[in-house]
Image (cartoon, rainbow, N blue to C red; front, side, top):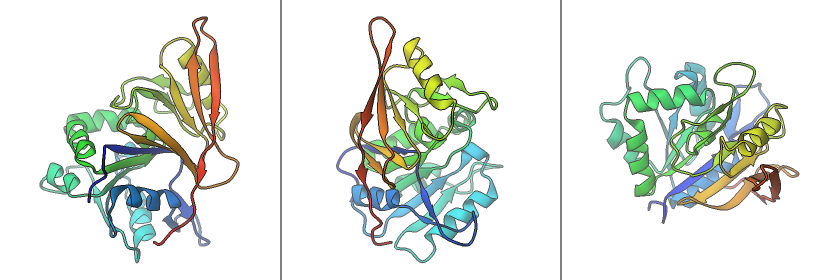
Length: 247
């Protein structure tokens, strides 16, 4: 059963790490949340990894994380060419689409070249739960702060724009993120924006932010809004703490 209304889970969270090194991952609680939102008992989940150019090691981590779970994983690669014959049919056949992190500018450019924006919007409207981390969070919004152009972060305003907000990721863990998001909202480059500490996600039903969720205590989400005088107000949004469910 698809989600009851268009749903996006935009996050600074994802896998849980096991004990055998950085490539030894398990699905974090956010995936159980997305499965619940999708209504699927054995969710079909497709990984899109174009933000790092379909890096093969990222697919290795993905399939390793979901091996032996109730999830039915697949991926859509676009480099050097699509790995499936019918992109639209493949994505519409999923319960969850998960987008990895990396360069949001490159991600959106490649998607547009392949018509993914229109296809993913059709999936969203059909009840496929869309989500992702970092670049995979910013992409659904109007834009945000990005390192797509180098180590000095810049504003990006050419994302898909289905969610009419700016988006700030890694808000507590990368020192340039918070001040740049404040500047972008303060000077009107971005409208009201929603930001997430590491370990936090935002759940949108349609274009409404309905809740923030977290996989760790102490982390939070934030809303940045601009006053008439250009000052920026930061309002903390306390997340609901997720717990690991049945994999």
